Length: 247
Image (tube, rainbow, N blue to C red; front, side, top):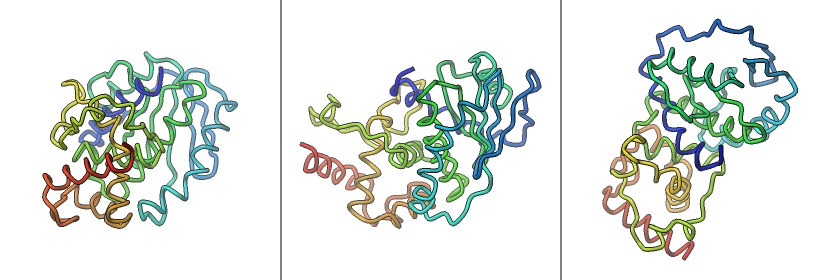
């Protein structure tokens, strides 16, 4: 699975937040449980401790930065559950959210529960993206896909998943998506947020500051309340920012 396949399927993760009361522990294998500093790794399907080092390194190398960026003083221990078998991974997902998202490789159940399908060397990046989602839930436990454009923009930016706008054909032609379009459901073809999410976060932080970015998370993306401009002006200014910065 390449970067774009992972990112495009990542949106499923927060559907679970309305189902958090369910017991979702699987019993079809005997997982290996290893505690490493800030994280507890739960390894399914025969995965061994040897896979943990790069994942744990990636997470811990970015741990303090992400918390500082999002103005979170501390985190509870985060469980990182990893499957090696896609069928078992999807069965756990279905048990948690009553449906499967074929092709997904990562999602969060809560601010302390990350679930991942092992993807070799790319697993560490998946884990970082999901951890950024988990931290944003500490800032505001209702932010999951509410709104979707901001939920993904946070994790994409904090995980460093930059896509150069000069490689995005619709931006090159001047057709910048609206926030309403970026909020559209993945199953309706709403994938553009994964390409432009970094640019949205960058625009907010450069034009205002990181505190305004965090306040926007707390306000569930209420632009008028937090930034003092209309959504339409925000969209126009974002377009101008990207063109001036990158074109």
